[in-house]
Length: 272
Image 1 (cartoon, rainbow, N blue to C red):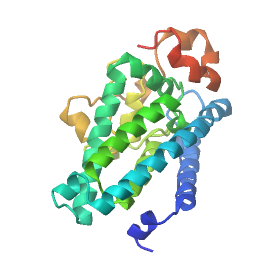
Image 2: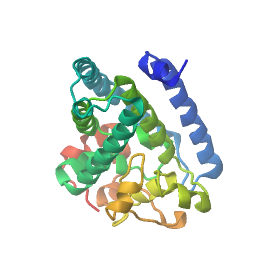
Image 3: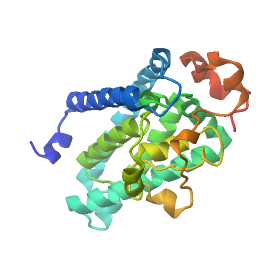
C-alpha cells in the first residue's frame, strides 16, 4: 500500500489507532520527563477528554459537506491549483501545505486579537498544566470557526482530496506532540524550530502572561512567526501555564467541562 492509497481510501480506524498510540507515548513521556512542577491529574485529563464528543459531532457534520464539495471541485477542475495548471502531486503537496499553514497562522493570530473570538479560544488556554490532553480542549464554537476557515481556504485551492487527508493527519499528530508536557533538548530544538513548530515553542504560547501568550502562533511551520515578529523564546523554568485572570484564581470550578462550555458567554474578564 502506497501513501496515496493509504490516504485515498477509508482508513479512519488505522489513523485513529496511530493517533492513540502517539497520544499514549506522549502521556508516558510526560510522567517521565514532564517540565511542570504540578503533576497532571486524571480529573484534568477527564475534563479534556469530554471535548471529544462535541468536537466529533461538529467535525463530522462539517466534514461531510467539506469532502463532497472538494470531490466535486476535483471532478470539475475548480480551484486555484487547477486554474494555474498545477496538477502534479509535488506541486499540490507543497503549495497546499504552505498555504494552509500560513492561513492557520493568520487564523490563530486573529483569534488572539479580537475579544469576541478570543473568549472561545481562551477555553483552550485556560489549562493550568499543559499536557497531551490539552490538544482536545477546544470549545465547539471555536471548532466550527476553525473548520469553516480551513474549508474555505481548501475550497479556494481545490487540491486532491487525499492530500487534504494527509495534511489533517500530520496536523493532528503535530497537535498531540506540541501540547505534550515534555521538551526537546535545547540544542536539538534550536535547529528544528527554525522550520517546524516544537513543544518548546508551543509551551511559550501557553505561558500565562503577555507578550508570550500572543506569540508562536504556528501550526506545522515556525517560519511565519519568525517572518512576522511573533516568535518568542522562554526557558522552561519560567513558563507558567494557564491564563493570568481572576476567574481561574478565584473559582477552580470553572475548570470543569460544563463551566468551560459556558465560560465564553459570561461577563468575566478573560484577557490577561
